[in-house]
Structures are given as structure tokens and as C-alpha cells.
Amino acid sequence: MKNSRSAVLRLHCPDVPGIVYNVAKFIYERGGNILHAQQHKEELDNRFFMRVHFDCSGMNVTKSQFIRELEELARGFSMETNLSFEDERKRMAIMVSKYDHCLYDLFLKHKYGEIKADIALVVSNHPDLEYVAESFDTPFFYIPVTPDNKSEAEAKAMELFEKHYIDFIVLARYMQILTPTFVDVYRNRIINVHHSFLPAFTGARPYHQAYERGVKLIGATSHYVTEDLDEGPIIYQECIRVNHTHSVEDLIAMGRDIEKKVLSEAVKAHAEDRIMVYRKRTIVFE
Image (cartoon, rainbow, N blue to C red; front, top):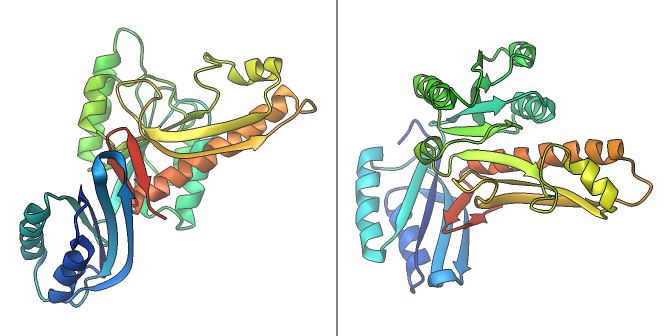
């Protein structure tokens, strides 16, 4: 355990007395020191959620022993657990089409150390943004997608992801619908962003439709991808007020700002193991 300075334990189980005490005792007895802990009681199914960030640099057990003994603790409370270590930094892939605002934002936040994961590669169904990836010294792969080759294109992408040991995928305005097969391989590991006009304004020109209807709020949503288009567990949302003085161009510019913010917030939370998915909901710890 000495190679890792800290670790994060996430768990959920039926809500019964003694969970916090037993988890803290378990970590303490193995030489760990809790740095930060958060809990949440979910009314759905009377479920208890917990995230514990702890110092493991001085622990008196190996990783394998800690994991094995954690499984014994989990059985006693019918827990589902997830354990990650600081030295096991996640590797992310970005999928993008032609819009570049989210891609640039992710690269810049990564450059400044705000995203605690490594950007391993960029995959696109268009060649237009290769220069962006190159400017950040990141491999770029152009995989064209047509109605006739969708399965083959996804297979190529998944082969790349396996080769580069990808842990999760970020859709930075990737304008393709992923197949159920692809989604299932990366369940709760694909993060998408879209404008929050759905389901009211669908199609390619939502901001124009919103302008014509005189909307007073615009926003964006980041979520995990499921087989149901844009209906996966929501991670982060934000909206801002607009009025009749704003043009279509104003709405689009404001929308871009919100989209990149909610996407990067979701990526940060996922990289830091602050998200837990239960049924169709997420618990996002701060």
C-alpha cells in the first residue's frame, strides 16, 4: 500500500445502524487515516451511500489483503463497494465530431491539473480537429461513420480503447448515437453533454427553435450514456436566464459556455470517484 498515498472507498448498502462505525474501524485497524468522509441516506429503497477518502501510506496490509478483508466486511452489510488508489490514475478517451469548444476546455483543464485523469487519445468521425489534439501532444484517430459501417467503426474504436487501457470515455459533442453493444461494454463510464432544451426542441437547430419560442432559460446537462438516448443518469446541470434582447448567436455562445462547464464538472467528478449510480439516479459527492 506504500506506493499509494491515498485511496477512495465508495459503498452503498441497506441503511442499518453501525455502518460508519464499522467502516472507520476497518480502515483504522489496518493503519489507514480517514481524510474526508461523506454519507447520504437515499429514500429510494432505504439505501445508505458513503464515500471515504483515506491516507493509506502507512497501512500495515497489502492491497490484495485489504481488498480481500473488505469483501468480508461487505458481506456482513450486503454492501456494494468500489475501491480506487491514487497511484492508479484513470485514462480517458475523448470522442468528438466538429464542435471544438468542449474539446479545448477539457485539454486546458487537464493541462492545468484540474482533471485528475490522463487524456490518452481522441477519436473522431471527422478529421477537422486533428490539429487540436496534435497541439496538446495527444494521439488522434479518424474513424468515419456511415449508416453502413457503424458497427465496424465502433469495433475499431473499442479496439483502440482496449489497446490504450481506457477507463472511461467523454463525448465532447460527438454527434453519433452509440449502439447498445458499445454502451454495455462501458456501462456508467461514458459521459455525454447536451443542451437542456430536450425534449422540447430536438434536431440540429435547437437554439434557433428556442429563440423563436422566446425561452427565458437555457442550460445544459451532463449524464452517463445509456441505451435510451439522452436519458441516462444525470451528473450535472446548469442554466442561465435569457431575455428578448438576446439574439440566436447570443444563445449559442452562452450555450457553449454552459455545455463545456457541465461536461468538465462531470469529468472531474468521475475522475475523482465522487459519483455513485443507483438505479436511474446519481449521488455526486462534493
